[in-house]
Length: 390
Image (cartoon, rainbow, N blue to C red; front, side):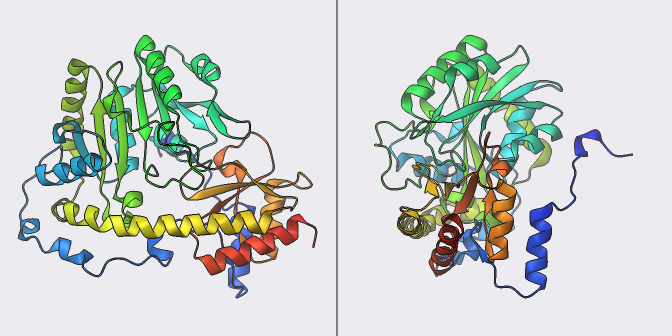
């Protein structure tokens, strides 16, 4: 009766069942997976709601690419970071996930594929399946730091490949794409006639000691060799996931770029999903987001410093991280990742296993640096205790 695109096993796994049991038993679980800034104790500016006092939000004047005012606000966001992005190259969406769906509609036919990094956030397969396309993975390799295996990426390209996804910085590894990697990728995509899709929602959140700015690839807004699309939104850069405003920035050769934007507008016009109120409020929300960003950077940096101190000299170690909201802890292979997570849950600590993100080996645990500090610190200490056999 139902589409084969929805054939997923949605039954709770052992970890979900164990977590539910602990909570039903009344346990105080230290949740080291918290990634929602609105639930993480971040303070929002008192005047933020004034952004919604614009009387224009009561009028409906649909524009497929988004209102000029909102797109100019996004353009100003990039200008403040030293990048020139004209409003004409910006198309608004309700989220980054919707941006992916628009781009998959733009670039692919049923049966085509896109390349995605491994490890990375486990959303791509769901988004691709809903568009009747496939994902093929290319590896990020770790040798004291993360890098793209460019040879393996090139080998993964097939005649049905339409795009390469990069996440900059990656979630959960926290590794930025380097300038040399982006240049090599642009050359490859130009040669093969495929596009770059760059997810930059965490780009503003560098962690100490971060790679120098000169080494980190900027948003590929200036690429001219191939089509490239940058994606971001209020969810991360302003800590406002509930506002539902994202965007796509298109770049590349003049002709194909203009055609891509025209077709994206046709797609957007079919759905018109971005609400008028959030578009009217966009300038104020982006301005308020600067203070929210500052708080998040202070929170993530402080939690990272505590994690390094708590796990120093233990049997568990933190892999190199450059940005984002997460860290990856390499645990001894004395038990499986699932067993590590379940043992920690028995101590009322919740973390995520590496296999959620398609790590190729074990044992890795992923922790959110957005967690409120008292919870994070207590959970990190309990993690060290388990790692050291206490």
